[in-house]
Image (cartoon, rainbow, N blue to C red; front, side, top):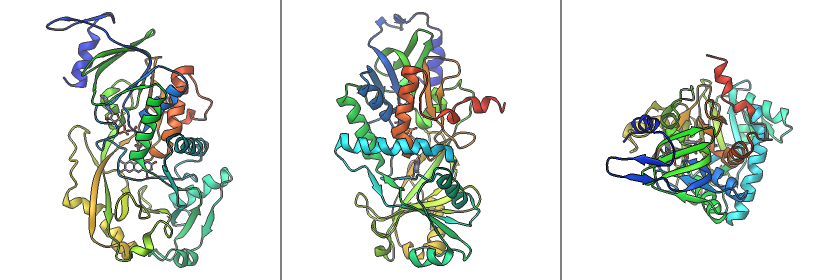
Length: 407
Ligand SMILES: Cc1cc2nc3c(=O)[nH]c(=O)nc-3n(C[C@H](O)[C@H](O)[C@H](O)COP(=O)(O)OP(=O)(O)OC[C@H]3O[C@@H](n4cnc5c(N)ncnc54)[C@H](O)[C@@H]3O)c2cc1C
């Protein structure tokens, strides 16, 4: 049964104790303090943050934990502090970094590589201008590189003469599959129940609590948290904000001069296209062979249940011209490609808030292709919102009310 059909079906039911099916009357099963729907980047973190507070939490995931069918796979995710998207994100990043350090300790694993970050473009472009604005507002360390110095220190890039660079020491990358697994395991060890391969079919909430029906069971909880990633639009039809899911391509090539692209020579990097999009990439790492590059700009609009997940020959066009024009020493044979999904909010900023119509429901979605680095702190914010109704972290700018005023 589809989520929408099931949702209408469940809305016709009265009372939470029993549900009449065609064959039998089935008793409602387990009860929790909080149910988290979706155990990807944000949901696994929320489960950990709740469980460590002693909250009885159930996490429900439709696929395996972790898996490669949503938004949180592909071996690396960039983390930056001088955030060109908006300086208001910086305090959240500062808390996110502290929580990443903590997760490394709890899991006993390396999850974050600090390589530094190099952002390149015209001086007043979005990436250079925005990164400098955030760094200055929050007193973050950075180096400004003029075009000569940029060419001298980073000969990998063949850039227009007028382009400059910003180099920040705090940037690097996270290992996404390992992070989701580490959050999930830490949550389990702290007492959370996590169920993989159990899809949520429908839910309902009232002022006393919430009920969730899955492919296996029915559960009741005092609070519900939605972390459905690309499926959020299907799960949350009544939040009044359109989410657009897009198909994104990641690629690995074997550079013509591999020594220029190693972990000790290259920071994570991004170049501005002056149209709101950028190309970005990572130094070569042990987990997967080759040099990774991708385009950060909306790909083709898609549906997470019907998307073409197999990379297609035409997908190479999303990055090959940049290799030949700007990174000629990396322009070698293709090794692999992967397809991943963005869930774009109308303004490209995250949506983290209480549900506008259900006081016991909290939502986290619309991460618009830049959310992973925040997953550690998003889990903390969600735990705060679900348990206390508010968070001391400065996350109000990500609330849903910003869209209401535009209608
Ligand atoms: C190609 C690409 C590159 C990116 N690069 C970066 C980067 O460099 N830096 C960065 O910070 N961010 C980056 N991002 C963005 C970041 O990865 C995402 O913002 C983040 O992973 C979103 O996490 P999520 O928890 O919202 O979604 P997901 O991790 O996809 O989790 C959602 C989960 O909900 C589950 N679910 C949905 N519906 C149901 C249901 N009915 N029942 C049960 N379970 C359900 C799904 O199966 C899924 O596991 C990138 C994203 C992509 C696609």
